Image 1 (cartoon, rainbow, N blue to C red):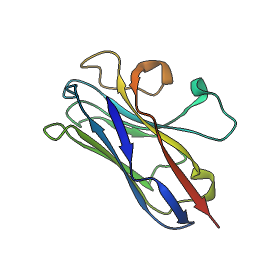
Image 2: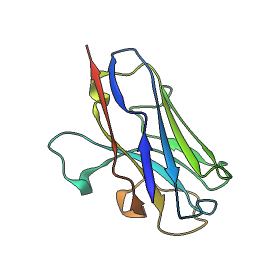
Image 3: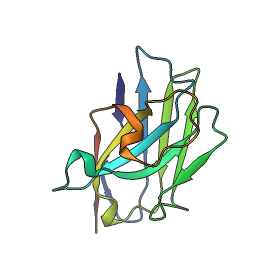
Image 4: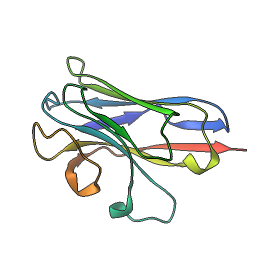
Length: 127
């Protein structure tokens, strides 16, 4: 089970750190991803935000968040984080943590790459 937390209401330019806690599963062999779902979009239209490979050696971000967001993980603690700085109104969405469906794969940009999802945490950025 993946459980996200840390969302909230923040003014543009502000920061939030999202957390993803894994319980009942070992994430050491899984690429972990963050996705977001904007209002009016379907589940399968969730937008890739960032991923981090099992040992953290490979990381990538969506162009829209590069330089502002940072993904990290602690496998011993079964935690994944998304540090979000300089937030923009267009970052408003429900953010989801996800685990790759194939162990030891070191990338994952697509919704279809993941088969275990949390319930999401709302991030709202105001002007």
